[in-house]
Image (cartoon, rainbow over all chains, first blue to last red; front, side, top):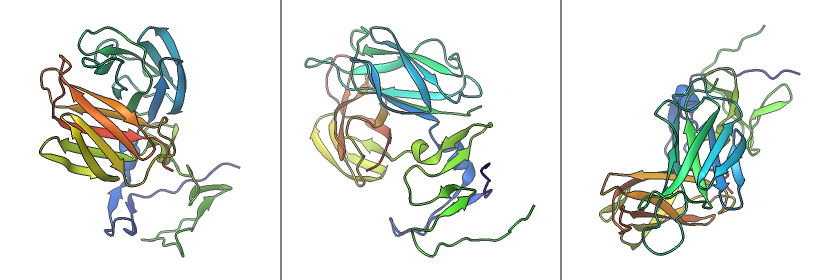
Length: 137
Length: 143
């Protein structure tokens, strides 16, 4: 049996949690929801948890690719990443950065690097988080 | 085809379910609501919703604004533990990202994750801890 559709423009809460009723145009639900996210262990290499992701690929040290299940409609999506600290004391902050140019990632995947911010050396680390927002196809 | 036009549907209780066909689209069950995205693909509202976010002016106003955040603990410069109001199902499975204002190539990273809290740090390119204006968002499964 095919599922039906409920079409409506506004969500409204009773405020039972915060004590204040709120309403929201459903455009914000569709456009504001994350369309994919990952929590990746880059050391043993495997997804701890994810949403709308088919697979992850270990290209090299600190060099990985996420493949999206339901692709984005174009390359103009937003991907933001963060990760756990590297080992050692001091200079252990690390950044998650995408390969290529802005808007240049394929609609169905993202290749990214994990690097020490101080030395730019790529590194495998646990607890890599990336969120994706944008229009899905 | 029939059409119902009305202003409000109010459940008799918080356990009220709306079911289309055999699929509950609104219910008290976990991960039970899907929407059609911008194209034709379906996406889960529960999985896509940000479960916690915040903006910190670290050192001055740690919780400038936030959602689902009970408190912040100032451990040291650039080192803050965020305690959630409603915790996550597991500490090693949620997705947390953050960024801060540019301050000598500052980097936001996570130093500890638990189901009920996470610790976020700020360092500059030299590895020195620093207080910055920091935004963060967390996705994942609530407990």
